[in-house]
Image (cartoon, rainbow, N blue to C red):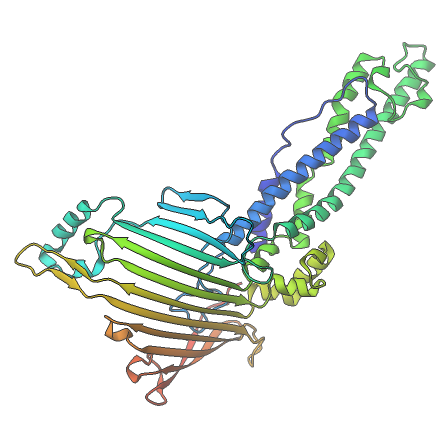
Length: 487
């Protein structure tokens, strides 16, 4: 499905006509007009197609579905999930705005200093709504009316988040689009594509010249007015248009010669097929799998019933085995040494192609929040809503690894490790709470999924619901999943 979608996307990008058609002039030769038209069309086509396809791959990389769901266990694997990608590493310099969402980003200039980080300031006007704990504190019979009134009082700017975000952007770290590599690969692909198309176009041009020569020779033999001002046997691509005396023939060639040249750059379906065969769109998948550090420090400023002010710090690290670093290692150790042949051989190798879909993945994240005290007056005789200040720390670790066919021989056997530590001041169910789960998943005859999980909790009350409790801190569970395996 992913390959088919990529083909359709590329086909739609390459289906636009060239902006302008070069015209032949009477005092130039047929061959020169053909060559100049073909070169101009080729340069324009290569630049436009490279830019548009490159942007499509870049956008695909930025929008790639990532993010490890908190409930992902067993057959719901880390391979399908991964940590959230914050789409900052690919935003162009300057301010980026999403008016509908009320988001604004500004890429910080660093002058001549080369930093291994992409820094951005981000301002977000959050959706205006009443703070949820405040809603729940209101008597149920008064809740709807009071919440509606509090919501009406909220104005733009009553819930704003300001943040500084940093993403790693080195050769080995970060998901920035390697445009220079793409342009090199696409250029080689385009050269191979056009070589065949241009040879076919020249064959058509030679057919025109042969037909003109036959007509000129026939006119001389039959005593009719000369079609050209040169002997028929000397007619070639060096013939100038103004040497064609017959007005119909001159007009016909002035129209058809540039059209024949343009046909050399018009075989878009063949270019799509070549790109798919070369695995060009997999460049986005390799970039998506790059190891990456991301850090952010944000301040959420809320007023009135929107809730308390809050400071939020986040750090994440993400990694997957099949990425640009592994490509570079396979093709000579340097990004500049990667050729189209080496790239295609690598991404189309069965083990690598499978790895792009189902490879080892590791994520580690830490989130710290410092919430200020929130005091909000409610209509008398209800006491004011008073939420004390509080802190929270959440650590998450996820690792997923495919282990091949497994003992049942049906494929897709894998191991997943999920660990979470939470310490949230005002939530007793999440204070000093540590939970880790090791899950083995397999399929029997591609029809029945089986997963075995062993869970650990640092306090017995936090142990997940399991089939058997091995001790106060350990539990084991077995689950069966019916239905056919998804492709």
